[in-house]
Image 1 (cartoon, rainbow, N blue to C red):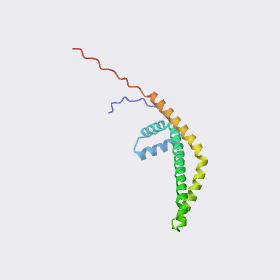
Image 2: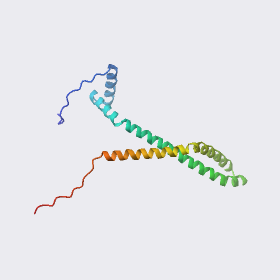
Image 3: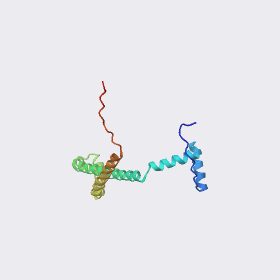
Image 4: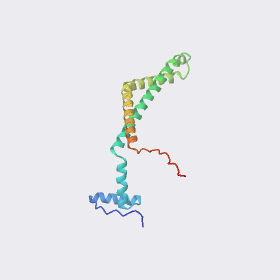
Length: 155
């Protein structure tokens, strides 16, 4: 017997099809129907709209950061190929064709990403500001620990 106080039952009405699906899921996970429903409700509360919104902002952030990194690499590859490509071609080196192909790919990539770079930079700044604001809200919700000086012992 559990030490937890027993909660009064809560009659839950639901469509029969939903109940059957929940019973199947409970059986598959080895839980009771009640445990399955409680697990699913708890899970839905863990993924609140605020958390989903935060995850979407992080995904936007990662995408923008990735595009900016790719732009930086494409620009670097473009500059390297401009520096060494002509001398390799003049020497008839077999890598000259590869370098020229890489330069063309880098140029196309850089051109495509430059159009979005200002937009991405603004997006990164906005997401950082929103995440900082979220962090401040969370900090304000945590209970503050008060440091107290120990009372002197009476002698």
